[in-house]
Image (tube, rainbow, N blue to C red; front, side, top):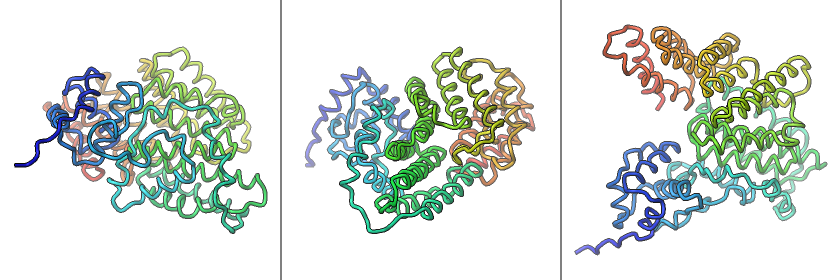
Length: 463
């Protein structure tokens, strides 16, 4: 006879501490799984939880990591995979993202990302809400004190190397803005880990050149994270963002730190972690991160802060932040001074889009519709991804207010723009279209039928 399974008393104790039934634990686990793109685990139910308590070990390598994150969020303290009683060893990247040496972590992350078996290689990279409890700044740059202990290659790094890295950043940033994070992301990661990371171990003629190269590496790590975020690979994106913050800190580049924190806040807000997002957004505009930033970058930081304030119910604070962002962008347009190339895309249409999202989340739907229209009207043709998302949001509000045929017209324009775009955000937009159209399908409205079919076809080719 096969040996009887041993009851998992550790998992049972965690369930008791959380005050969860098997069904509630399963529902919480599924939310975390979906957030991390683990759709294969979306059908986990109370019977699975019960089976794990009775000693069954789950087959999917992501299950222990996501379950640990589920309990971490519920209990408000770190819960590791080794605490679950599932017989797994702690993965080498589990734990605090801020404590590891930046270059070692970056190399390991890139190796996992480019692995032939990505699902297993990335199984430990769950999105961690605890990472949003930002440490004090000295810990972000802990690797600065360790730089003298890193191996230094004999290669001399010059201005030409820096210019080449910046050219690559520009190229892929434009591709991301136009076609989505699903295009070329592996090439960005390959370049970061095999070409740029070795340069950081090189010999620099001046400390200024070294700092500039670390800033460029930070921008490339940020871009890798942003593209992963856009592709809905949230755990992976968060790891790149954390590395980008630490590279920027090592370069003593406060505005770049703020820029990356702004992205982390944007991601957290989109995932529903609104209070944590507001905390990170506030950190992005602290001190030199805002003071030393260009006017255009200040406007970008400000609109994300406004969105997080609106999401947490602070409509007055959101309005104040939006007004300041409007002023900052107006100053940028008036001065035409030197600006970091990473904010080249943030113009009137971008501000209007974020303003509309803030107004929508504050409950001002008519004003939000007006701003979405302003964004669509002023958007350049070079930005089909964001334009499609803007129109998707606009159509959703039109449908919410009863204008379903008007919404279908708007959504049809959005679907036109999605051709050739590979983005998790456009995929989500198409899903939201179909969800909003669901009550109207039985009514035989031709516009509904056409848009629904087109959205379904887009999803079938994008997932």
